Length: 194
Image (cartoon, rainbow, N blue to C red; front, side, top):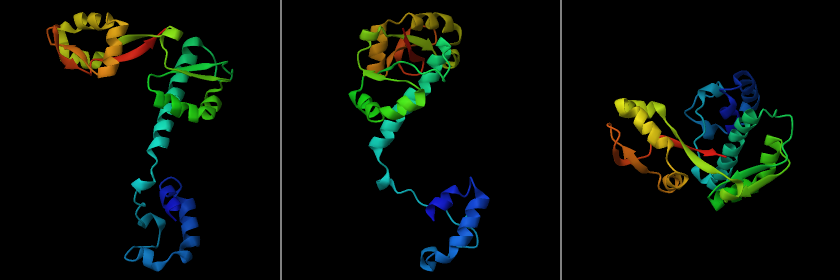
């Protein structure tokens, strides 16, 4: 019955019909003090945290990020989704993330229309370098007049400085007059460059 209660907001008429047909099987004690005339009068079931598998959620989250990045790459190279790719290389520093992706590799292959998924932690092997993309909205609000100077400084950050930013989550920020200041996390988004 919980399944039907969850589906009720999305398929109200079908779930109501199913509920009315199955209502005779409901144990009256389980729904006492509740209006059982309609499935829409019943509360949604409570979440049972003990049934949530964090490892599976983490694995799904990892492959979801891979699947979301693939159309961007196909767009840049003008390769339609109907053409299978020979190989896709997933580079990640966390061995657990690579293990999660490996465990669900068949879903990645099917979803992305690729023949082979290669997992690696070695950016240098594939010639990957980091570059910084300034977050113009945040920079504009915080820096106002020094915006251009700071933007230039951010774009000149080296690969090593950006790797340090990824490890610590922080780099020397900039004050409103463009000088180095306190640690800041919100001013840029690292992205890959090949």
